[in-house]
Length: 71
Image (cartoon, rainbow, N blue to C red):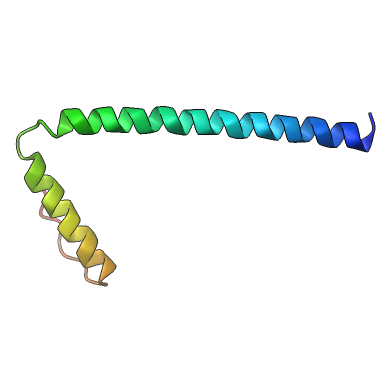
């Protein structure tokens, strides 16, 4: 096998792996969207989202509030 053939096979294999990873990411994104739709119908969802957003903003500002979220 020449170097060129080896590089071509290696490149093809790498592209195959990358394409498989992209397909898995797409699948996971769809699963997360589905979970979010179901979770958004649970009682207390809006309050939980607001609490998480508040904690994220505080962490971005260098403050770390005590978590208050209860499930």
